[in-house]
Amino acid sequence: MRTTGYTATEYGEVSVLVGAELGAYPYSNSLLVRGATESLVVDPSLSLVEAAPPADVVLVSHAHEDHIAGLGSYEVPVHIHEGDLDALRSREVLVAGYGFPPDAADAADKGMRDQFHVRGRPEAMGLEDGAVFDLGGRTVTVVHLPGHTAGHSGFLIEPDGFLFVADIDLTSFGPYYGDVGSSLVDFEASMRRCREIDARWYGTSHQKGVIEGATEFRRRLDAFARVVEKREAALLSFLNEPRTVEEIAEHRLVYRPHVEGPHVRPVERRTAVQHLDRLMSGGLVAEAEEGRFRAT
Image (tube, rainbow, N blue to C red; front, side, top):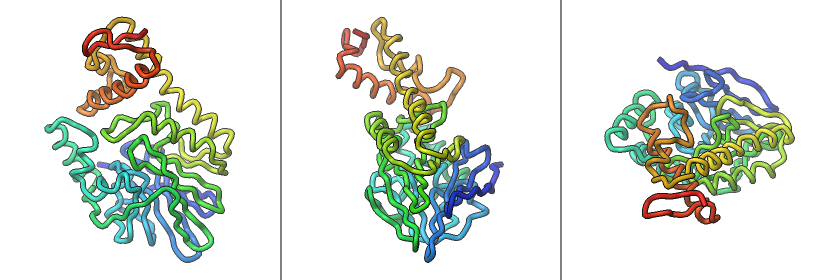
């Protein structure tokens, strides 16, 4: 039985609706933004399934189930970046984006339907970087931050100075770029973009909550980014002798050995391929023989 309900914390006219377990998956943190004429909800999560605050519009940072589980509570216009629009419109497309084998995809589809209440929103509308929602004396501006997903976006709320960075979440797990449409290169560019934005508060989707001040945010962002460097160093060490992609996936760069599930192998494989591509282009890894890679 999933916990519902949230704890609201206030940052100017932005309410962070903190989910159970500090928003750790399968939960997530949502936002309620109030203006003089309209209000807006960002990422209606499991916490909003039974206790959804009223809103005139919904914005979704990206199409993952933990960020849209409470979407059924809203019969108002829903917007998401064009890169994730098809996945929000169709649960079938959303599941396909994880790249699971067929039997695991069927189980994932059932879980999204029964546990996360994902039904698909065919009427959802697409957004572009820089789109602005005027709520009356308060604006919400879309900041496209791809990499986690193709359409992953943050939202800058002014005049409060609140930047919601969604799943650039600063957790010790590090950046996740293991979906079919994910990109390590784009994720790193998105982190650099976040680093350049001065805000008073920086809100995350999971566990770390809200960080106050650009200096502290950048410190934590740099530590988060260093997880990518650690994965790359671990891969280079493992490639002290020729290895296949499957051997790298089995060795693991992302998940700890005790983590099990149908998602592990596909995510590890896609992560390995992205790092191999970059290391080979930089001359640090070469294909020693067909399908086997070694550090140079």
